[in-house]
Length: 88
Image 1 (cartoon, rainbow, N blue to C red):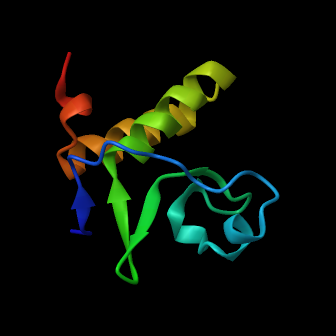
Image 2 (image 1 turned 90 degrees about the vertical axis):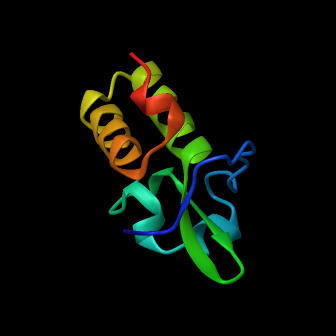
């Protein structure tokens, strides 16, 4: 399983169109082909799943009515043991 940042409290990805965002690898996004919904954070040279990033992507997908992305974010969060995903 990938490294997971379960107690990550901050989420501040680069903005759309920012050069740093364009340099992020496709695997850091829930929609890699379009580089949408980032959920991984680089820490000490490694890309780690961020529970805060998954929550942000989940909420943004719900707001945008993108149910497939919101479900994908929740599935990854549940598998990764993110505290927010296991609350019902």
